[in-house]
Image (tube, rainbow, N blue to C red; front, top):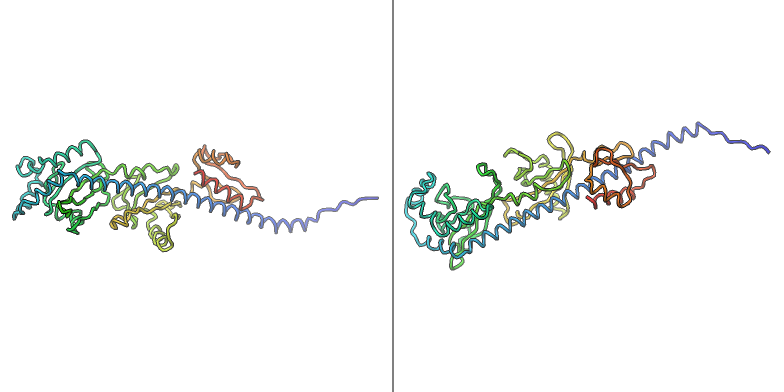
Amino acid sequence: MSHRLHGINYRVFTTLLLIGLPVLVVASFLVLEDGRAKLRDAFGLKLSQRAEQSASAIDAYVYRRIVDVSMLARVPDVRAEAERANLRPVLPGQAADMDRAFAAVDVKRPAVAAILGTPASKYFADITRQDPIYREILLTDRAGRLISASNITSDYDQSDEDWWKRVMADPTRGEATLSDVRWDDSARIYAMEIAVPVAGPDERPAGVLKVVADIREMLASVAGMDIGIDGEAMLVRRNGTIVFSRQAAQPSARFFGADRLKERLDAAESSGPSRLFYTADSADGAPQIIGVATSQLSSTYPHLPWVVVAWQPAAELLAPVQSNGVFADLPPATIQAVRNKGWRFYAFVGDTGVRFMCAWDTTPEAVDAFAADIAAAL
């Protein structure tokens, strides 16, 4: 009995290939694109989490400083100094005359020397010597006249200053206030002014205490953020102007993602709290994944609409998806942690540039699990 081997129908086979291969390629591409999107989302969520941590640290630091300055304003000698000054009459022309003396830095003038020689002034000077965070401390009476200071200031009459007006806007109780961050070019520091009322015997404001504080410690949460080899972080305002950048920035510079930032913040306000991230192109046209977190200070101080932004180049997902592979740049600890969970891949560019290859039958569920393990290890 003879057996006949069936020959291959090459026409049918070719037809199947022509139909099946494009479907397989498209399906593989879609699976990989989905995986890449989930990996991008994982990076975005991690960046927004880092931004949230930084924003929380900034809020805690500022509120702690306000409490510290408020406690300083409760020191008996400080309160007594303000009360004594309020007993002195306000003389016509005195403020203008004293302003000229302070502008000339005439410390030998008896009236100027008397202000710098009060017990409160000596106390303030001791504080600024012992604690470099405090760069300047000054005290005014209820009329805005300077009555004590840690060091010579540029003017005597403080009643025309914005910080003084904000504190004394409610003369029945006063209100603590603070300035935006400013760069002090002479001292080469970032500084902030914190002003609080000094309570009299009846708890009504008897004067105002102002501190100029070095806030490098506050900004360390931004400057020290660990967000990858090419990652960056900034403290910006809601309109995109820069409060602090880890890199040198011009005073008029704006965050490159400012327009989309405002859109996303407005959308987040209407949709409720959630971790916020988005993509935008930097000045050189490179796509960036940006995580965002808002400071809570603006709820108390509307003139401080601060936002922490942290970003990484999308290119740290080292190459676009063009086949069944994804390239990513990951920290060594993350690579090891993911491998410890049983995933197998190898370094492709240096020690941190890895390539993730998928088989033709890789399922979306496997891609989701892999992306989740990477996110957990970041």
